[in-house]
Image 1 (cartoon, rainbow, N blue to C red):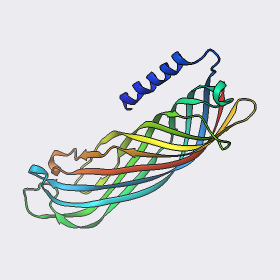
Image 2: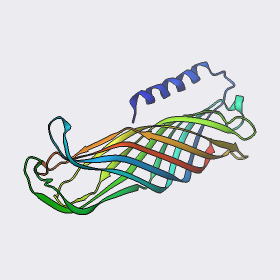
Image 3: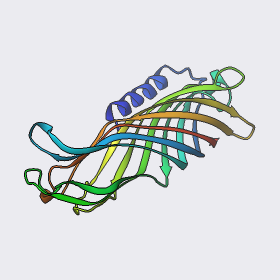
Image 4: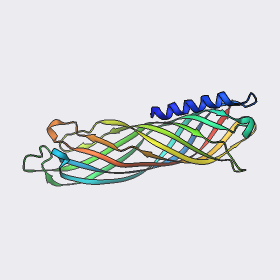
Length: 242
């Protein structure tokens, strides 16, 4: 998780606490969300990378996937006395359950020897690359709902784990990593009697680039580089404000 954003979020919360009037209400909200996310990934697999990143073989990868999502969140809400019941600035944390995956297959064929870029010869077989995306968490700041529609904006920082599960005829593996991303979004929220709050929101996350290097020293310096990874998600959430 981005430490700088967490520090800024904490500073904002402390500032709001220090300058809030005694009449300003504070609330804690907990709830869950059901929705879906669209994932777009674009990158390159580099084979037999030599000195100065010289590539003797490689191919591009462009993949999309639709993932069902479910999450739980907790929020600190500030400003109910100014913006209405169950409405105010929110500093929140959201955890997503389950996992998503993307898969890419390189058609079978004969290519330059992947075992050693300095040798000659050929090798053939399928390369099936799979990545599991899970452990997604987000810290965010959210504005109060304004206008009769309850329109709000939000920004945040997200992190997730990327677990690879490839089938490569050389027997090589690429290992796992984690990645951070910048999130922004908007939505509509409404409060009802009894402390319930309803939200419909859409968010976009722009993830940092990912580079994974082949873990097999005998398989040459092969690597996968994901230059663009974006997720667009939407969902309906229900929360209870204490």
